[in-house]
Image (cartoon, rainbow, N blue to C red):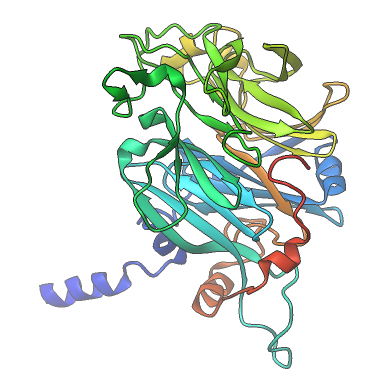
Length: 405
């Protein structure tokens, strides 16, 4: 009898697709209070005008989320992944890459997929109302990679490896090696790749590594490292030039999410809750937001910026913020005026890491959550007989550049 009970229990395990795709037994047990959200201002109207599906990672809640508004119908959906951080949409190829940064690190490639086409339409093209993003494949990397940001440069996938003070190339089947690093980690014995000294954490992707820029919490290796509670952060942050490997801007405080847009390097000055750009070697603030700014992408004259709560034990990292008033959310900012057009807030949310977008015509989001359009039965059918588009490139449309849109 005991053996029979054991067999029955084993037979019942790993039946939920959310567990299988995330390799996580609790992947189907997301606390619904984490999904509760409220909109402020013209959030849904701004998102609808942009015509995009906005993707974001909530690392401490182990969620990758999609937010969309079409025809007056808001949708918020999700997919469970362990501690997701960097996310980048390769809009030329029609795929999305997401880093899952526990030990070991794992990078997922998400593709648009749909269930079995309707009878009589075996080759029908999936619409955004039918199509969702699901993992197509993944790769594991050593935990010491400590992957933060992801970027597509020259058609290849790169990661900010904070654990190695370097940028690593993830494309191809070989073990990733440092492809770029700042001059300040070089010593007579060679570059220091063994331990995080700089919190090198984001990539403003240009056409090449030399034309790209990178953010870090410091450009000096000292006894106190960025993970230490006593590490001095105020005004120590820098932006490195890919070409010179030296800072081109100083005076930031724990900067994140550097991005190139219309010829300028934009960045989140996280410790002060600011969004701004680099000009003449200094940071120029455009907007101040209610939280630790991290996560940034652009659609025309609108920036979508993430904010997080301040983790209590790291309050010293946010000298310009009131932790009690910090919010978890994403905000649409008018680049011309710095005005917040609208926000989507998660009252029970914590940390938001990355924000990027895909065309709304590519996919409506993920197959999980109240706004997903997939209940347990239809979700089971989707994963049992899904098909992925062989031509993501055609549906994504013409290449318009890696970061300048």
